[in-house]
Image (cartoon, rainbow, N blue to C red):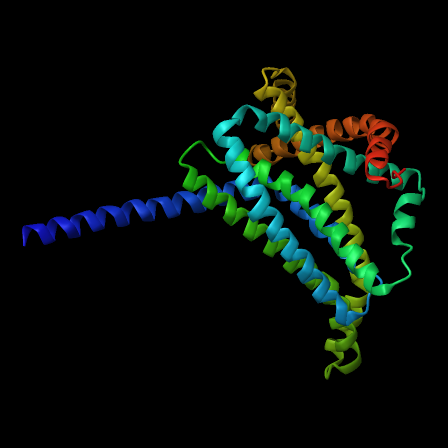
Length: 323
């Protein structure tokens, strides 16, 4: 009898540890996922362009193909790689994170530059000039998965940096939850966005109530505005997150002066608003300054990427470089 009680006590202890581990994993996954929010917004804003021009019946299958590629990118390639780096080479995480941040700054600044100075991209136009529609779908899916790999690498690296040191199991499960959750969030949102105009058309044509038909017409008219707003928010988020990564990376590498100045500026600026809004004001000022830093760095990187790195990659791959 005493042996049975001891066994039950051990089982109860294991259950408590397991429950604590689940709570720990969930908390770490939520924290890590929130750090990657800016990239998630941009991912959701970028992906719908890959189904543009296809018939309505091909939109969801294409999104499903891309989402499967995204799951593979995160869980099969990037998750093991992230765990290996955190275990055997943790010192490379900060530089890799800064590299990803610099890429975000470049992408965001390039979008701003394109708005200020519209120009065509001959390489992209050549890639999209494909005579076979089936081959075009395959090429667009491949392109989307390649873009997703870059964004997923940034998401997983940012998430890994936000997870405190602990057991490899907790890190692995937390990263897996982040990868699965973000993929479902992004591509579920993309599916809703892509089909929203079809729903609007259906409601406007077959809605029984006048209010329903009016809602459908409003949905059709409002989706282009929403997509433009989402793209703008995604660009701002890229610059903010990219600049923030660079600033924090400098702090990690022993150069905290920039981060300290931004913090002091945010605290000083918060005194000009009511006390209840101090926290939001500090965050807004910090995010704004990080965004400006990201934009400035991105503008510096544009000629480097387009004149040096792009042609070099083009020479290696045999494809024309983007301009």
